[in-house]
Image (tube, rainbow, N blue to C red):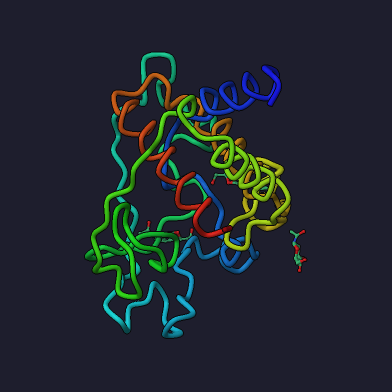
Length: 216
Ligand SMILES: *[C@@H]1O[C@H](CO)[C@@H](O)[C@H](O)[C@H]1NC(C)=O
Ligand SMILES: *[C@@H]1O[C@H](CO)[C@@H](O)[C@H](O)[C@H]1NC(C)=O
Ligand SMILES: *[C@@H]1O[C@H](CO)[C@@H](O)[C@H](O)[C@H]1NC(C)=O
């Protein structure tokens, strides 16, 4: 309950308020084969098909990215793997339909719940300063849990595409859910200057909330 703890939590949150749904490496997509084909369309375990296509959750499709620069500071020069993400690594990924979301369309879009993601529910985000002692304890224990739980879905890149010999020598590490979010922030740092800064900020928080629910 010390001020340090609170400053740390606030700092953590202010540092991490960023983008997005795209800057991760799904565990199933880090093999030489997948990196070579550039097609990252993982199977959804629910029906055994890529992107949950059999259940109408999504389809595997070509990646379409904007050619617009991300910001004045970062005109495209073709030297940063994050430019035109994720095309350096993947040119086909899952496109989720309806209320489905995620690398294999196995998750629900924000605000939707239930097996078929058909249930709309409001979430209430409380001001951290207005939490009761019990709620605060719960929140901190979620952060701790996130710190100590390995992400099942995602891994972290430890090298650039070229350091990976254009994908023929994959370099990835397991990562805790908490560290995954910290790393996402680093990886998408130039999101700061892009026009979609505010929406990304929101998406980032929303993803945190979803992770907290999943790890509960
Ligand atoms: C995707 O990348 C693969 C492997 O480099 C290439 O063969 C294929 O033509 C690319 N597809 C598209 C749609 O760019
Ligand atoms: C990686 O791909 C780039 C661009 O296609 C090419 O110039 C380079 O020679 C490749 N490097 C290796 C190690 O295959
Ligand atoms: C990550 O952990 C899993 C399960 O412990 C293990 O099978 C896998 O080899 C690890 N992957 C990497 C990239 O270290």
